[in-house]
Image 1 (tube, one colour):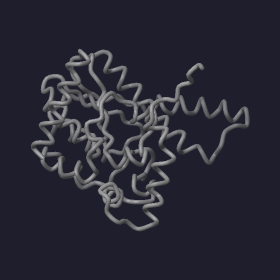
Image 2: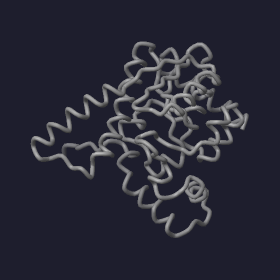
Image 3: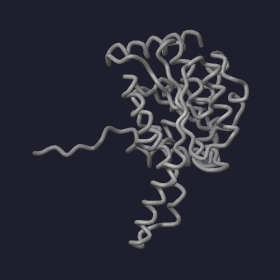
Length: 246
């Protein structure tokens, strides 16, 4: 684990040098992946690492966990509440669609949730511009393979240091780095709506996805879910399609 951490830290430092920027920032949710990234960027840039907390109707528990990440990792912290911004923007969009009879109730929850992720991305880049920092993503191998991230939302970042590590490997890294025990043991959630958990939404577990990625046998039902998610989300991982003139 020491070797992996050292390699990631060196890689982050190299990317910052290549880009000619001053440091790194990460959106801190109070979850495991962003906590691990916060610890990593602090090791890479002790004086130029920023953790950004962006609540949108965020629970008191998640806010407490996010603040624990800031305190424990040693990164500088900033909090910008986007609750009102999201409410006004989504209400305005919804009202316009309703007037055109184009509002779909069945898509309401997901559309609102994805707007949360994209508002957060826009905020991170706005802050990054002022600091001359790069935005570091938190997706692990399991999320990347299944496409469990919002395109141009939490997937809209400059660097992905955890993308080759399974969820369990990220948890092990969290133990090694000293991530707070409250965060190490919590259920993974993107915080997209009240009571939302990653595994409930995906229909399988990270343990099973990890096993699948390592080539182990998994139940056929879960294998089908994983492979269908991978196939349907290919557009999130692939380069943007470009038309080429003949």
